[in-house]
Image 1 (cartoon, helix red, strand yellow):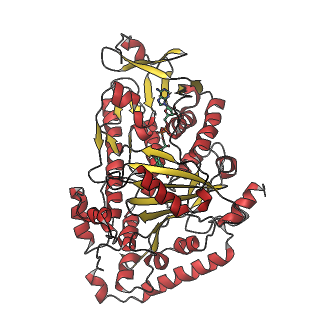
Image 2 (cartoon, rainbow, N blue to C red):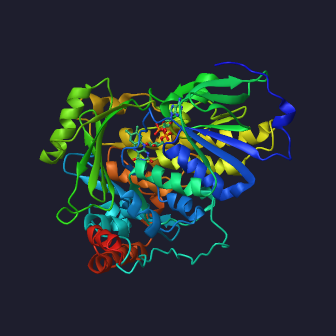
Image 3 (cartoon, rainbow, N blue to C red):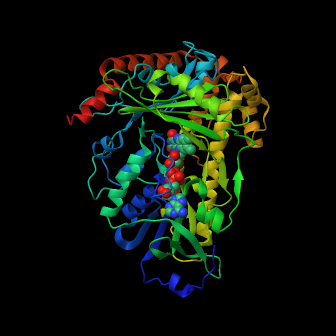
Length: 535
Ligand code: FAD
């Protein structure tokens, strides 16, 4: 990487439009471009340069329910973008075989209720009505078991204490997901490559410049800021802010600026994946309205139903199995439908850059950091990062306070998610081979070890989970602890002295509501067949 002199006064000139150069056109690059143009319109100048030679990672992705704020911010309706991205609904993550073979439980997009000041999980430990914590406490678990859509055929959303607002072009857009108090009942599955294509059109129609070329050099000025990137066919691209969306390569942040990458591998050893895209006949095969994570010998297999195909992949630790064995395991899991499909083997860099924003370069997406996709956090990290870029958008070069705040928020989100993922492995009852036995003895973050000791006596709440915003509310921790079954959790002693009739009535209310909704709602297949027919 070369150094060049650039006039710093020019970089700080307040009269000139800020030039943002985004290097990389995967999900991260195009989500960033479209969000910036939605936030600032033509008051900034945005260029995306992406290589036609280097591919993207997109494997068919599952998301967090907060992603709806992204589409809302762009003022895109589901009927606009979903059909273009083969998208479906996701009400939960379904965990199979984490406790023992044949067992499953859900982590749904539904807050846990409370009775007399105690969460339902606590009441359930005191007075379990059935053996299914998830079904007793959450309506969505039954909808997942029955394959139901969260919307009726006329588009009406199920009532989950969430009112959808009518919006027009001048309505205030809800952004910054951490300030949203409500839990929307679903997220999406979609094809990441199709979303990037859709957002390319969205962005370029609104003035984003799109260059198809390879960045071959990153030039730094005498202060160590990036002055420009050089491309193979379009010369140099000057900018004020450079966004590194080059994926695991992290060409700008880690390579040119030398920011170190801090690995999480000691606590999260899964470092590879093999993926297959399996055709699906929507008329014949049911589509589950959830992502499935099935525990396997050296990791777990994801199943993501999309319109017309299923995305599936085995995330595994290369210390415990080989790519060939992993591919065989995945093919055996899927069966004959995958026979003619080519496998995509992926190496994963697990951890985060020490700082994601350094000087005038901010990394978004895999270049910033990544953890295995067990709770579908990759696109959530991107969405969170771009919201924070807007929140802390710099005026010039001297905004180190804003950069520091940005870096802290990224650090918290990623470190918090790491704790949550590690809990899945420590908390899984399964210990039937060396891989699963080692999940119980491997080092875990100290703070998590302390929290687990507390949770054995008092189910997780806002006071005892990771203390900074990281996208996962306390109820999520309750789902994993009570679902995976490897850590013995006790109810609060106070509940032995309390009257449990109101709690039992609440379980019954949930059961009846779930029963009614299962009868009324269309299946996910019916809903999307209807949407695609343009009804
Ligand atoms: P990439 O997709 O790698 O894109 C990099 C871009 O940079 C490309 O456009 C490339 O052409 C460009 N580029 C690179 N070098 C140059 C250069 N020199 N010049 C110009 N351009 C260049 N996330 C979820 O939310 N849910 C999931 O279910 C999920 N599953 C995943 C499963 C696996 C196995 C993996 C690895 C990731 C998963 N993720 C998931 C994460 C998600 O795929 C990524 O967060 C997302 O796709 C963003 O990738 P990216 O844009 O950062 O990088």
